[in-house]
Image (cartoon, rainbow, N blue to C red):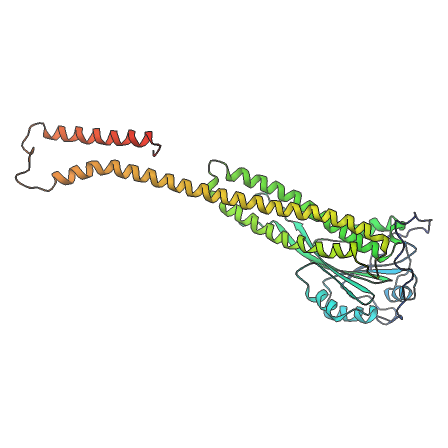
Length: 370
């Protein structure tokens, strides 16, 4: 059942920051998505029809879509893991490109922005931080997903893949401010991107805590044994980086390139998003450098500790070799060996062994081998 939510009174909205992208654009001929009165596909988790920034009281998706295609406001559809059949129906309804439909059904690994006629298609990688009580060498730190957005002159369709990056709260916040929704689908695209970049910054803050924790562990007394944790954190950071960095090119295009569904006055706001995204990207790159340094330091420390252990072992082997060598010589059982019949020979040998072993011990201690 579609989420209709509370009705907003048709009050005078606040003045928009930039003109509605609905103005001056041609309207496609309406096409019916499904028989009148039938329920929307199960993949549609939320939808609404907005006229002058206020949510319409229409309860049937096909009727609302027909009104929007005639130029009466716009429709915002929210889908979650749609099937190929569902997307085929919407493709016919809104004249969507087959390549964009393929990405929406199968998913896409990188953020991108493409324009097909009067429709803008954006893929945005999403990232969520996975809470964990302890940072181990197998902890899952980030979970990735995707939000794909189709933006037309009279519709916007968000396709979500993954369990995070839910847009229900964002929809409610926009509906509480009709002046923003008056700007049309471009405002929805801006708000979704803004939310996802805010999520990036939230993950950046949590990553910073994990890096501080792992840095403290590595440089502790037993830090040489934390290499696996450092490697795991760096691997998770690389996954985070793959999601964050590619969004820079789409934001630059929205901020600088003429796009039919994006008003010219809106570019300044997308430039602001690009600057915000740059903060997240620079933070991720700095984290990558820090973790590389920590990993190198951990490996160097492990190598030094291994060398110290080998020196200790070598020192004790040298000390123990003294009585072993002397005992081996006097254990050869020759008949004419000197000192065998000497009264104090046994005590002399024991004293010699003790003196040599103690000399070696203090010599190694002085050179910090022991």
